Image 1 (cartoon, each protein chain N blue to C red):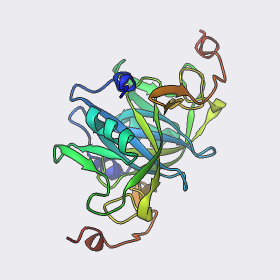
Image 2 (cartoon, helix red, strand yellow):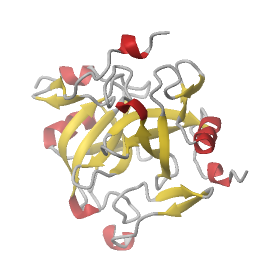
Image 3 (cartoon, chains in turn cyan, purple):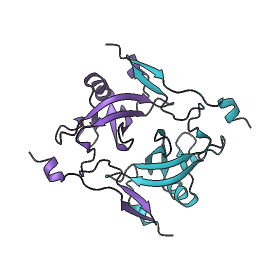
Image 4 (cartoon, rainbow over the protein chains, first blue to last red):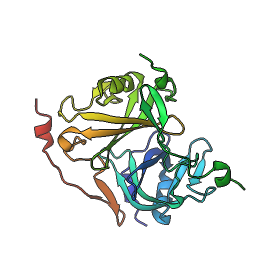
Length: 129
Length: 129
């Protein structure tokens, strides 16, 4: 496969690139995470978002536990070639491990972080074995 | 001023936080940059995006040269408190230094990065002294 497109990316010293996931239906930015070269290649190849978990130091197939996979509709790169934007369809309608649509569920109001959206599913339900 | 909300942020070892700017009118993700504590405080206080330029190692008042300021409509934080999402009004309709609406102007098609949007203004015009 032609992987020249991966060479365009300016990876961090750790071999990572920041990734923004935007829901193509709601338009919401639902998540921010990181990818390494392998995970970005897999994302393109499989059509589903595969991130690099910095905490677990391993590939993280989004939805591998919760079932809430992210189907890829488009992969874009920014002007400096060091940030990736994904247009995704969020399966299950939930991107956040807290059970909300988006990870960005707190907004600043009068110098306080105030929740702007509801929990759609109990995380205990999402991550039960 | 109450700045407890700034203490919620989990800054990187370098004292920074990644920031996503989304145009509230078009819904487009237009930019990704970084802020330090001072720049985020100034962003909230002034109502216009102030970033931290990692290359220039100084505060970067978005639009200080181009005039394309970003008026803040909302500041949100993610579940891990380590990413900021800004809802902005993009003055001039151009966020990218290339003269495009968004920095994410190349999308992957058949293993190639293909431009998806036009230059609205010549950068030489935007940055002339």
